[in-house]
Length: 152
Image (cartoon, rainbow, N blue to C red; front, side):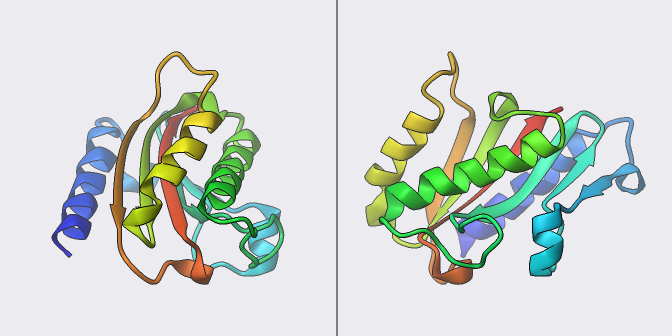
């Protein structure tokens, strides 16, 4: 519980530090056609200034509410690919991710998640900063949820 509170506070600080000359009223919101069809109760991303805040994503097959099979490694890769699709739709890319927040259903999956995460970002000289914690009860019964921050 304390970790979740710390992360929420950190997210608020990052949001307001990243928009010094911007107000929350200047935020743009992006909802993909896929998310519109699935009627999710949130935006895929919010854009304030030059920063894209991608909502938490799980490893669902695009266009469905069905999480991919294959365990934490497969879910991690699909989750990151879902994030990549959102960033590409916004004219950005996964190369511009500078911060990730990884939420695991089970901390015992940390090593396997870390292996898949590292493979996804292998072509980069520098990995994004990251926080990881475990809780229980992620959306759609997922083993991992990742949200991230990227530049345009």
